[in-house]
Every structure is written in C-alpha cells, then in structure tokens.
Image (cartoon, rainbow, N blue to C red):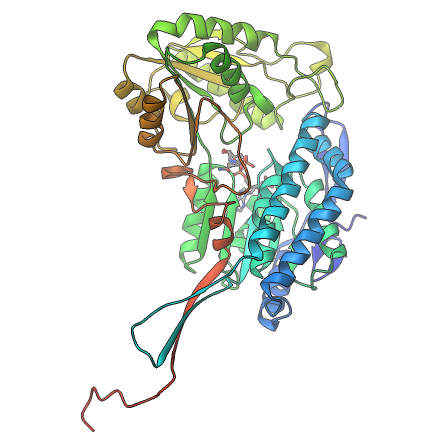
Length: 490
Ligand code: NDP
C-alpha cells in the first residue's frame, strides 16, 4: 500500500486504500504507484490547511522567518535535484537533461521568493492629519488550492508554493495525476525543512474527481491554477459562489513575427526551438509563425528542413532532442488538430503523423509538423494544440503583422524579429500579450512577472506581483487623539 498523500503533517494512504499507476509516455512502463485521494481525504486536507491558518502557527512567523524557510527548501532541492529530475523525466518522458534544467529553474524560483520576502512590506500613508497614523500592511491571504499541469510539473507548482510560503498561507497542492512524483518529493522537503504541521498538504488524483472541493469549499480563499482554458473556465464558474480569489495561468497561441530585415539565421533557429521544444507542450510555445511575405519561402523551407531532422527519443536517449507527448489522449487530440487544419485548407509541409520508428512503438511520439498557408480564421491558428505543430501565416506590413499577432483570444506571449529597433519596439508595445521577446523567444527569469492578457489568464506569477497574489492588503487607521465625530445631533 502506498502512502503518498500528505495531510496535516503526516503521510497517508487514501482513505479507501485507492492507488493508481503512473506510466511513462516513452514506453508505457509503470514508473510509480501513488495514492488516489477520496473526497474525504480532500476535505481532511482542507480542514488541516484551514485549522493551521486560523491557529496562527505560521502566520505568526515574520516575513524574515518564512523567507529563511523558503531558502532552506531551495538548499534541500539543490541537494536532491538529480533525484527529483529523474522522477520528473520518468513521469513526463522528457529528457533527463531537460528535467535538470527545470530543477535549476525550480530552485531559482524558491531563491527569488526567499529574497523578496526580506524586502520591506507595507507602507505608511500621509493622510494629512498630524494625530492620525495610517499604515498599509500585507497579510497572508488564507488557504490556497494550488493546482498544476503536467508539462513542467514541479516548476509550475513552485511558482505557487514558494510565494504562498513566504506570504504565510496554508495550502493544498494538487499536481496532475499524470505527473505526481516531483510534487511528492517537494512535499518531503517542505516537511524536512520544518514547515509547521497542516500548512502544506498534498492531494493526488484526477482533477475531475478531487478538484471540485478544492474549488467549491468555502474554507478555501484562493485558487491558483495553471492549465487549459476550458478547465480555467470551469474553475471560474465554480469559484463564483464563494467569491474566491483566482489566479489563472491558462493557454496561449503565441505569435512569432519575423520581419524581412531580421537576422534570418537566428530567427529561424529560434523559431524551430520556440515551436518544437518539449514537443510543443509549452504554454508559451511559438507555434504561430507570422512571416513577412518576401522571406516566406526562405524561412519556411529551412524550418521544414530543420523540423524533419529533429531526433525524438526517451528520457535516457542521449541523441534525442525532444520527447514524446504526455498521453495517448493527447496524441489523439494533436492528430485530430492537424487533420482538422488540413481539412480547413492548411498545407502540410512536414510531419503530420505519429513517429513510425520501431523504438517509438510503445510511446506517444508525434513528428514535428509545419502547416503552411494558414489564416486567422482557421481553428488550427486560433486554438492551442499543445503539441509540435507550427502554423504559418504571411504579412505585408508592420500594421498587418500587429493586426494578425493580436487576432487571438489568447495573450500569453509573443516574439518579434527585426534589425530596426524602433520598429521592433513599436510592435512589442502594440502586441497585447503578457511577455514579448524582441530578437529572442522563450527565456524568462523568476524576477520578472509572468502571465496572460485576455483569455490566457488572470493575475501574474513570479516577479513581485507573484507574491502579491498570496497577500491581503489591509489599511489600519489609528487616531492618536480620539474626539467626537459630531456628525449627528445629540
Ligand atoms: P488541464 O486543464 O487539463 O489540467 C491542469 C490541472 O487541473 C491538472 O492538475 C488537472 O488534474 C486539474 N484539473 C482538471 N480538471 C479539473 C477540475 N474540474 N477541477 C480542478 N482541477 C482540475 O491542463 P493540462 O494539465 O492538460 O495542461 C495543459 C494546459 O496548461 C495547456 O493549455 C497549457 O497552455 C496550460 N499551461 C499554461 C501555463 C501558463 O503559464 N500559462 C503553463 C503550463 C501549462 P488531472 O491532470 O489530474 O486531471
């Protein structure tokens, strides 16, 4: 029997003994067995979080003390980084080296928030009255449900857990059922670091089963969710009854604009990385190429050549450049998405099918795919495939490029390539997306805010705002020379 639920400071089996196997997307082998929580386990986790918060066991710590805890967690993560990276690579099918990069990002996230906690919080306000002291104070928001996706399992959870701890919240973490192992490892470290009992809790199981109470329960104050748009919409509706605070990081269909005056070689190389890194299973993937008409053939022919050469392989394949899709369901969705694009009139230039290599027979490998001749009205341009599928559109002017780049309900990220710095700055300013890269695509730092415009989400993670999501702001007005108000007659 496995005991991988962490509730009120103790490791537990599910109350009905339920468990499920985690399968490698590379070859379907079983990589772990984990507990599958019941509704009563979820309610226990919420009770533990609520009671710990209300007891003051953690909220009474100073920001400095909580920062020290988060810094210690970063140290312990560093100690165990390779062990955790191995688990993450087993669950996701991504190459071990990519999982190592992700762990480095996880540690950097904890370090960023540990440092942020040490800064001054709150401020005095001059209300223009000598006898009044007015203070703005930042307080922990309360109990948070932290729900993460499977593509960067620990990193997306880290963006929530680290600020929640610095802020002094109590929380329940729910990773994707497909990739639970790294969250279990993080929770063991949080325990080892000395986090008070009940502050951090871990629930495992499918979102459709264990997610409902994490959103509906009136004892939860905030839901911070990273995942798909339709799940985000479900969460918003469900959270309305109890007017919960929401932080949503949803999908993207991110424009990548290349002008004819760009460094074409660098732009092409980055376009290939932007679309096919982690087989496109990246919320900020640059899968919507928008290229100036005069360089279309040169750029697209080279991208197609490069895409056709990308080597697919599993976690320990040292020659592999990217890995499998996460699940058979996802493989089916990506296959259907490409078929729909072709039916809409897109021209398939490369890929467009599952890998037929014998060594990929038992895994969910889909070939890097380029669909040319696309336009804004197409489903494959408007919707996210979350797979290795690049759509190509052309533009004729700067105005045209901006119009196409903004013609989407999403607004997570975008890129623009040009050697004309003023033009690039104008386009960067006009694009309505949360992150814009100029002559680059993809890098981020924990010190800079991350999040979406429009239907890509609500709120921001990372940066300073990423801590603000977990804080309430209170104004305390103190009259040091009390007197009658005198408004009403005696
Ligand atoms: P999902 O929306 O399917 O799932 C995300 C998480 O929500 C999982 O833990 C899932 O659990 C859980 N969940 C599913 N249904 C419910 C529910 N009804 N109530 C509560 N929780 C639920 O997304 P994916 O995991 O498929 O992730 C891919 C999506 O995430 C993409 O659209 C991508 O763009 C987006 N994403 C956005 C990022 C950003 O920063 N904006 C970063 C990374 C991904 P389970 O899997 O166990 O069912």
